[in-house]
Length: 290
Image (cartoon, rainbow, N blue to C red; front, side, top):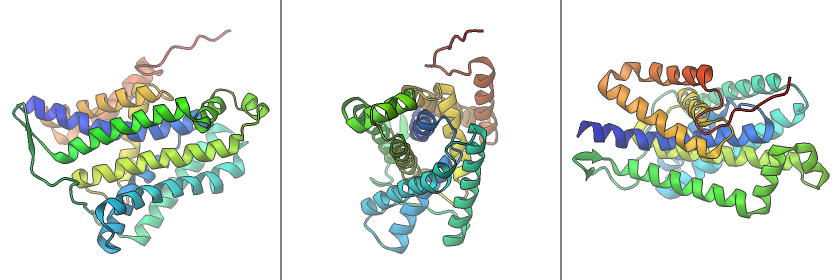
């Protein structure tokens, strides 16, 4: 029974990590950079939802949507104000800028809100659902279902919409995309907006389970990055695979060893993949001419 409990918990939390990993992959494909402000979009999704629900007294669904939209708008501001002005700088410089963005957003969140932890009510109550002898929180079902639906919608977006195809074309060859009339700068802005929406959604979904605070984005962002690397950086299917693997490893390590070691084991897995298989599980080894 305990093993089923750990498995379900791992899959649910891993699904949220997958949403964050998708955000990393979207921006990586569009710009080639790792956006280390991604975790702050997660925080804004959670803290924004709390603010709209508890302080402005929005209905829960509208509070969550508003929190997610707040994260998306912040993603646009990050791209327009800090990335676009120096888009011709080196990749390293752009990555350092995203670290600065992360510190700035976290500081503003602390000043606007506070340093306390906050909660949201579960979307469908707190009565656990029995499954194969394990007690499953309804919020876990929400996390898994919303994550799966979001990924299916994202796949349809890239496959069937002009904007999605333009984003794919820009990620493959920005120069050729410009030659055929695609506005690469606008596509980059869309990438930041959509990636922030996915991360904000993860933050809102996880808040009833894990609580949220102004500084929670650091750890969640790193775990989303780890999921992206484990699955295959830049691969959308890899985000789901990496997120679920990471969630299961974290859940089992907390249950069978100690919760104090779960983060060390998680990031140890990240280092293992960086050393042994940097292309990730679903990635392919690229051959280079020498």
